[in-house]
Image 1: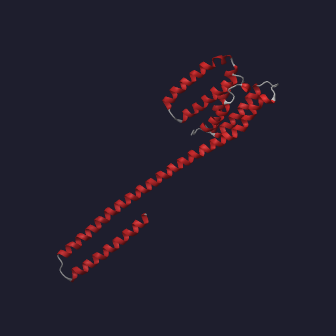
Image 2: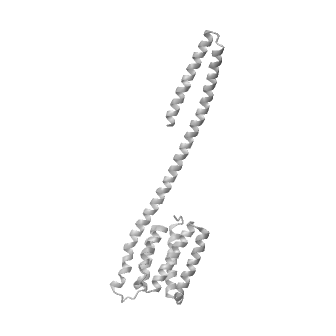
Image 3: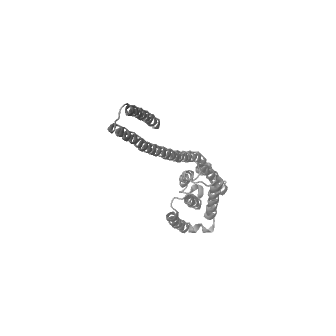
Length: 230
């Protein structure tokens, strides 16, 4: 998702929309097909160059705004057969950029249509324009859902990484503990085995009892440690 400030996104979309409207009502409108083809060629090469970077997302959003709005305004505006593309544009902008940008785009579109439309136009002709504000909240809602989905997805990734790190740390601690205890037990066992081979009487017997007690305490401590890790 884009990380630029909201005001940057709004200015970029509104400026692109105004530029598209100016182009569609100017004498350059007869070159709209050539311009669209050129924009798609530029888009193709920039897409290969920059991939899915955040800057590319902005470029995609501005490109969609320019192409769709210029097409609609240059083919009749309110009565354009391509007017339905504006509905898809509102959803696309809400999903690509901040959902609030879709609302701003809707308001700007309504203002542009009303300012360029003939005042003698009846309500039936203006009905598609009046339907845009009803589409915008739904587009914003879907954009919010998508944003929350990506946020939750990122949070789950962080939690999974933290859990994996904790598991790896526990496994390492267990391994190191086993190595340490194995060394300690082996030392005690070697000492006991040496005493048994050279058993000299009661003094060695007391020593062996003491060693056994130490081994029992060490084993109990090891069990408690393992339980805490689990």
